[in-house]
Length: 127
Image (spheres, rainbow, N blue to C red):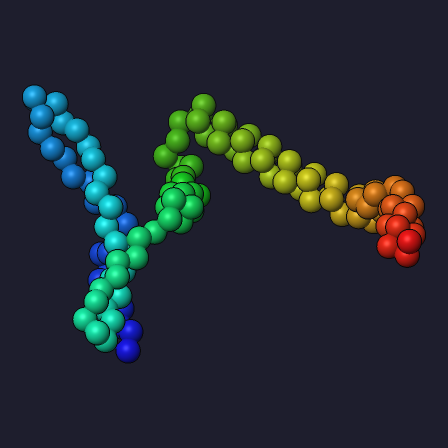
């Protein structure tokens, strides 16, 4: 029988920052906390830690959060810059999307001589 004990804090926080005092300088150190602890029927336990890739994905999720801006509280310069930036990024996104669709429509996303490559491999396989 395998049982997994995971508290909410351990699930969402894989690292805890521990601050230590050394010679008047504050040093921040990350202490590895197991993602979950598995308890086996024979009494043994196994700690499961996250991988570096999982940690990077979690950091990227925090970065990708969208910040809402209240444009009514902006002065003229930041207000103008905000809307110009929004128009520019939207235009680039639309152009990218339309370019992809047009390239697919005209067939320029596939290799020009793919038929020749396929024929070569088919003949090579027969020999």
